[in-house]
Length: 184
Image (cartoon, rainbow, N blue to C red; front, side):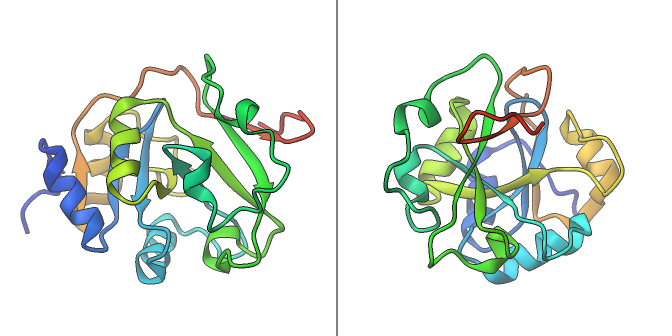
């Protein structure tokens, strides 16, 4: 099989839209991504990561309104959640009644990060506004910071790995609750 390493964002986008699991650069590290409404792709992503079903996944989005199908939007502090920050922030937001368990993992909240990174934001927009996102590393390994490290960990088990730079953030996103508590 040919290497999943890609240099063309359009090829990576086509693979995502076809139901694939694709590694893309995020703000600090590479992430594994798929469409949030594709239960088969999400299950495959979980198997690749060896991530149990009782752990939620992150929704990365171009805007807070894009996660409305999965999040109870009423009363959310939109400006605070969407604010551009020096370090990316993943917020724990209340899951909607329609949010599938494959996203929230049986928890009452959904992890959401509004990205300001142009490449990732463009992928989100092209895919309907949001993508599933989890760090591109095998369980217990450090997150991959470049495409070749993703390839070394996952080989041809991914549908694509976009060889492009990350956003340059020094650390992965901070994890916060709406009350301001920082969990990571």
